[in-house]
Amino acid sequence: MIHPIDNRYGSVEMRKIFDEEERLNKMLLVEGAIAKAHSQLGHIPKEAGEEIYKKANTNYVSLKRMKEIENEINHDIMALVLSLSEQCGEHGKYVHLGATSNDINDSATALQFVEAFKIIFSDLLKLEIILMDLSKKYRGTVCVGRTHGQHAIPTTYGMKFAIYLDEIRRSIDRLEFSYSNVCGKISGAVGTMASYKDGPEMQKKVGEILGIKMAKISNQVVSRDIYADVMFSLASLASTLDKIALEIRNLQRTEIMEIAEGFGKKQVGSSTMPNKKNPVTCEKICGLARVIYSNVFPALMNNPLWHERDLTNSSCERVIHPESFILIDEMLKGMIKVLSTLVFNEANIKKNLGLTGYSNLAEVLMLKLVEKGMGRQDAHETMRVVSMKDGLFIDNVKQESKITDLLSNSEIDAALNPENYIGYAKQIVDDVIGK
Image 1 (tube, one colour):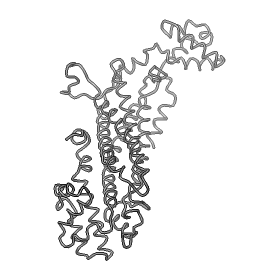
Image 2: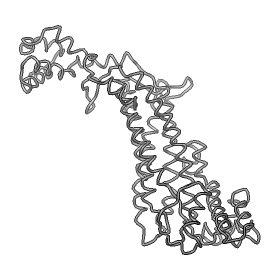
Image 3: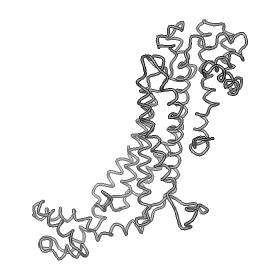
Image 4: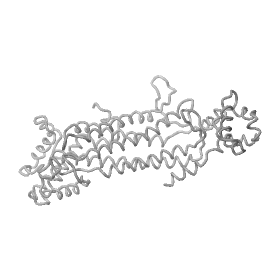
């Protein structure tokens, strides 16, 4: 094993969809469906269609035998055809009738994509529920907002999780659209169906037998904008998981430590520093996202091919398709685990709110001064000057006559309470949850 997706990343179920044996099995299923459709339309004897359909799987055709033939003839699909033909005796002469290699390849890819999407949608549903629960539970947990890495006005943890929830739902929408366009093809060498009797009916029947959608039009291949869209949708989802993981990593920093990944009783954080509790799952998610991002560019390049088709897409797709699906599977399952066991440090959340002496609430006082009659620009400049002074912010505020002439100490204290300045955060969170 060379690539980590073989044994380190992704679930057993997802890896199986893209392993060599299962890829062969799916290509054989397409060959069987073509033979069955031919027989149903009276193009070949019924018994021939039944025999080929029965033998078109890896119970009869071994990967080993196919590779032996491929090593001799240097063509994988023809090796598959000959391997299946061997198993079908006299009926083997009807295997692959009218078909071109990509009738098999693209229809097999559609079968793989359909199965892979089902796993992804199942995990996304779990993730959506977890984010809904976190949004609900922490809708009123006030925390400091941060912009440019510095303290800003308060927000809530409910807002953070609701933003992620909203993004995940958009990812689901994008993936559902991409999924709806996944299709196979049974249209021959340049898409005209010239090699098939009853071409449109043949393609329809094969699609029905396999349970997949078929392309309305194609050349030798299904248009690769469809695959590029799948790769982009996976990358877009990866960017949301990356975003969530990055925020958790930052908030787990020693000097912040508001939330953190759960840490097992026997888990080791470092081979040399026994005290370490590193956010390793989130770091893995961020790292794997970079690989998935990089697969979008070659997917886009696979769409413009010479004339009705060349082979430049083929080798590339053997890499980027399994890689993207298996890695997003690993990322999703990791994120589900992280968010399900997230640790909250309520004391640090509260402590960090007051870390700047509430100078991050200067905006509130600016608005209060405007309410009392000061011009907005004058109020902004007054608060800017006070904020830049050395010493405790609240003391500097209460010593500034421009402020104290308009605001009492009790009004200043109320304005500098973070709990009083979260706007419509709870309502916004409720609106997102309620969708």
